[in-house]
Image 1 (cartoon, one colour):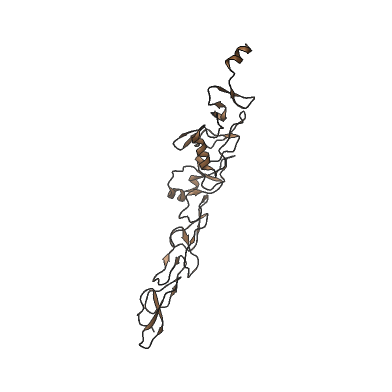
Image 2 (image 1 turned 180 degrees about the vertical axis):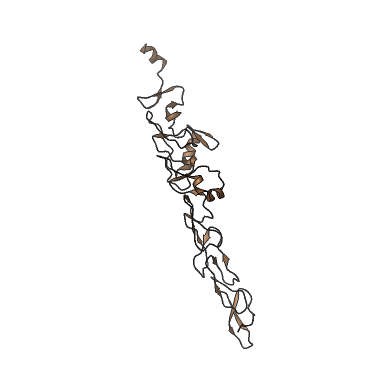
Length: 249
């Protein structure tokens, strides 16, 4: 038998008084009450009621989820997964994509892979992950999630012609190939590159990874006109003074 619908939305009635109408109580957090005499309904998975007196449960926002019932708050989506609006469980990223916590979609490459084109459409990256994410080149460092072609880590002793190539070359004659650090050290590498010995053209670092005063292929060129590259010293040294040259003659 249905009781009279006397309680307003956000409340419920569970005791009938002498005049036949129910006493109304605030709907508890974690439940919804459409009004009338219906008892509170616990929020389903994917929804929450963070406060009392809610007539409906709220869907979890994109980037969050709730796998329980009767909940008052949503949880952040876990790393390596994504959560759409109203999610009752995190969804794993397609291989080889990854994410951080609280992600709505997967649009970066997981560790040991790199993103070929950092300006690619995130939706296309999600739909075609193997087209955009490539396995880390030999000797390069892709230990940071979200590594791109431009931010590949180049270990010391190796050199690459620009930040748009995956080819790494061993510096057999020079001790001044500084590399570019680890893949997680992106900002420092780009600051160093734009500061002195490397040339930045747009987003491309040309001649990346040479110590100060050195440039060119495998860091075997000298930036100063008063120096030359000495293979014995494995670096740039000062040119002899005019007096020394005359004495030697």
